[in-house]
Image (cartoon, rainbow, N blue to C red):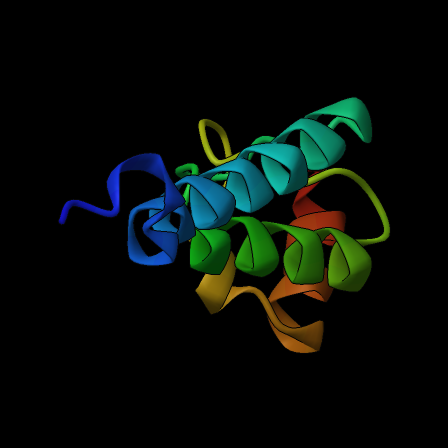
Length: 80
């Protein structure tokens, strides 16, 4: 007997994908541009935005995981 669509293991990746997609959409709505769509990259970008005090942009800024209070201060000084 085949479980078909009722197989919960099949639905888990979809749920995780949708959760990441929703988090990405929320970040983009706030002006944040993560380096990718994985939950890790989204969370790093959100944290970097909080540290910077403005929206993080992966295309113009250093990697999000490298942004801390000290690097944020330097970036503000340089006008980045």
